[in-house]
Length: 114
Length: 115
Image (cartoon, rainbow over all chains, first blue to last red; front, side, top):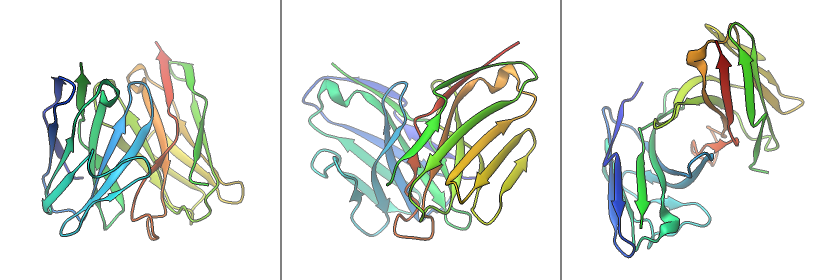
């Protein structure tokens, strides 16, 4: 199974600022995804990040607010821009091993916006 | 049509008992159904998954039962242990279709196993 790491693990930020979350996979993967999880809630997909193409965003999420980069097959970043307290959440990246369609998750980044 | 409905919201089981969590879906294009286990402060961990060409899959104490006609699937945890106490999420996707692996998650079930 793929091993996924995220940085930072948590952060406290001021409103109006931006935070970039990094996601590193220990093997090459085609599909990477970014999810948001409110404490005690389920996971909501933000966007799909494919190498060599623009990210595909789900309804309710826009590129200006959540720009994503995917420079290679093992790395992706998600930026949360112009943050407000409503952006306080856990942000998770995942990667899919296409051979088995198995999707593995990183440990998450816990973001608090004051 | 993209929803996955999960029940119960919370479940309390005695050690050694059977934990059963149910999920129902509407999108008949879904063809891959994983279950994830999540401990507090951790990311979800893939537990077991099933495809609709089989009705049951077992891995250790964990079994998925799948009913394609009813569009339902369930997770059974046999001989439940206190270490199984976690939040469980069912999910679904049309892995070979236009969703390109995007997972739709159920609402989650908080399982507590008492010693």
